[in-house]
Structure formats: C-alpha cells, structure tokens
Amino acid sequence: MQAFTRAVRRLLARLRGAPHVRRVATAALPTEYGPFTVHVFEDTRDGETHVAMVHGEIGAGEDVVVRLHSACLTGDIFGSARCDCGAQLHTAMRRVISEGRGAVLYLNQEGRGIGLANKIKAYALQEQGYDTVEANHRLGFDADLRDYSVAILMLRDLGIRSVRLLSNNPKKLAAVTDGLVVSERLPIEIPASASNQRYLQTKKDKLGHQLSSL
Image (cartoon, rainbow, N blue to C red):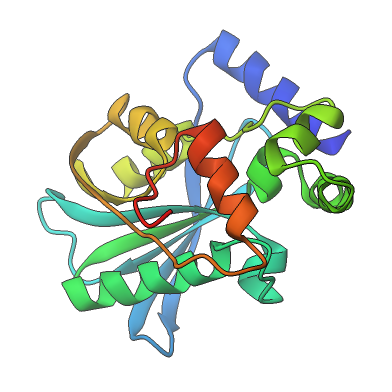
C-alpha cells in the first residue's frame, strides 16, 4: 500500500508539473574505499530522501562516472545472495574512487519501487517457482516501478551535465538520456552464482538487461 501511495503521489506531481528536490544535508563520508562527500536530498513531492555520494571535484560536470543505485536492504546490508545489488554498489564505489571523481546515487526505491515488505512477499513467491517479474505481477505491480526523474535533478544540482553511466539496464539509460547527456555506458556485471543465476537470467530475458556473461 505504501508503494502504491508513493506511486500515486509521483504521478499526481508529474501531472502538476516538473518534480523538485532540495539538498538538506552535506557531510564528509570516509569509507573503506576512499573519501566521499555525502549529500542528502529530499523529494518535495512525497518527502522521500535520497543520497548522493560524491568523490573528487566535479569541475565542469562533463563525462562524470555515475551509478544510480536503488536501495536494496537485503543485498546492500545483509549480503543477500539472491541478487547482485550489494556487489554492484561496492563495485561502483570502488570504480568512482579509481576514476578520481564521480558520484554514486543511492535512491530510496526498494524492490524496484514496490517497497521492502512487498519485495519479501515477492521472494516468497519466487520460492514457489515464480521468477522476479512474475512475482511482481502476482502482487499487482509492474515489473519495475522506479522513477529516475529525482536522480536527474540531483545530478543537475551537483553540477553534473554529462555522465558515463554504470548500468546494465537499458530503461535506466533511456531515462537518464531524457534529462542529461550520457556519453558512455559502462557495464557493471557481477558473476552469477547458484543463488542468483535465475534472477539475473530473468533480468536479461524479460527486462532487457545487458548481461554478456550469461
């Protein structure tokens, strides 16, 4: 229900006009990979908060390495092997540090936008034989409800004008291209394991993710 309410609020906001974000907090964030500056943004449409971790000087904002990462509590925090989310997040952080500048946006869109509780319900359906897309549909959701308009506004606020996008997702690439210049797509593939082989294959077959290793 919460995910549905958020989706309705976003739809109404789009009908009223362009979405808005505001930066509400900034601080240094040392990590095991290197130093970042963390910025917290609020979506004024629904009150959700999203995070941008920036490393280095953005400068003119051209050709900046960027990862748009949707929150995954189970993968990012608990180390779930059902998905490749946690590995992608930390790979992106390492890549940004190695590049000398870049940004990792951590977007509050759990479970491709359906929320944590519904994601766990989807996991239960997957244990009954449904794949990740079928499980979402059984719960009454589209396969992917994520909205990247806030991410575009966050990047603009940070002074980023063109990006080298760390992503395997063509829909994400198209969404970012709608508001910014994407000068290059950088693959961010994590080798499949026995626990996430079907999940990754479904993302490739049904969601069009560009996964050359499968």
